[in-house]
Amino acid sequence: MKRAVIIIGLSLVILHSAALKAQVTEVYAREHIANKAPVPYAYIREADVLWAKDIYRIIDLKQKQNLALYYPTKPIGDRYNLVDLLLKGIDNEGIRAFSTDDRLNEFTVPLTKEQVDKVFDAGIDTIKALDVNTNQLITQVMPRPRKTDEVKQILVKEKWFFDRNHSVMSVRIIGLCPIRLYYKLDDEGQPTDILLKQQTFWVYFDEIRPLLANHEMYNRNNDAQRISFDDFFMQRRFNSYIFAESNVYENRWINSYALGVDALLEAERIKEWLFNIEHDLWEY
Image (cartoon, rainbow, N blue to C red; front, side, top):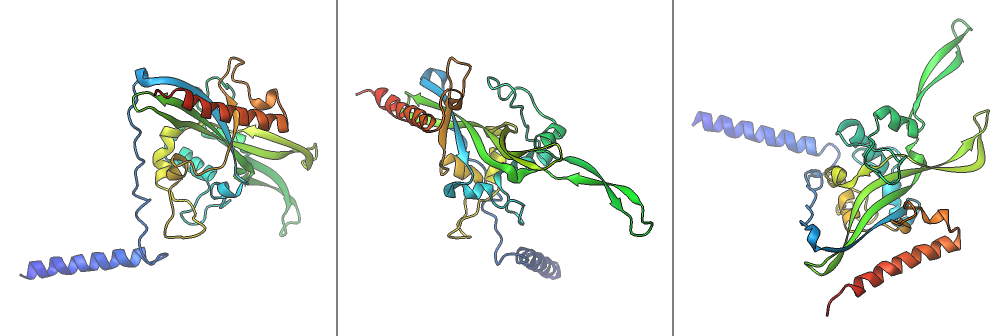
C-alpha cells in the first residue's frame, strides 16, 4: 500500500513538473506540429506516368501570401523563416546542400558548410580598434554572420506528370534554391546601384520534408491554428510564377530570351499549356 502511495505521489510530482515546464512560455504545450511526420507520397509506377515535364518557379518572398516564409528575419523562440530553417538543418541535422553551378545536374555536387557560408558572405573580419587603456591600435577579429535577410526569392523545381492509373495530373516539388538579391559593393566597400542576384544552394525536397513538418509557420489570424512548412508547400499555398521549363536549349531560363512583359507572357503561355495538356490527356 505504501509503495502504491509513493508511486502515485511521484507520478503527480512528475506531471506537475511537466505542466510547469509547459507553462513557462505557453498556457498549454504545443505538441501537434513538433511531433508531426510528413504525409508519405503515394507509390507511382514508371509505366503509369504517361507524360511528365520539369517546371521551375520563383516564389517572391515580398508577396503578401509568402511573407511567412521571409519573416522573422532572425529566429524568435521556435519561429524561423524558411532560409534560417534550412541552414539549421544543414548545420545540425545532416541536410545536404548542393551546388547551383551545373543547371542540368542540380543535386550532384554537395557543398561543405564553409561553402554555404561563402555564398551568404559569412566569415571573419579583421578590424583595427583603439584600445582605451593603452591608446594603441589593436587588431580585433569580428565574425560576419550569414546575410540570410538578403534572400528575397526561392527557386522551386517541380515535376508535373500525368498518372494514367488514377487519371490525374499531379505535381511534386523536387528541390528548393534560395536566391540572394543584394547591391554590388564598390572598391571602398560601399553599396552601389547595381543589383545582383545569386543562387545560393539546392536542397532536395524529400530530404527536408521531416524538418519542414516539425516547424510551424506564423498564422496572422490565429496563433492556435498554425500549419507546418511542409503543409504550406504540399497544399501549394504559395504565390509564384513560372521561370523556366525543361527544354532542348540546355534548360534555358525564360529571362535569357524574353524580358519584361514578354517574360510574363511567356510564363503565362507555359501555365496555359500545362492546363491544356491535362485536358488533352483525359480519355472519354
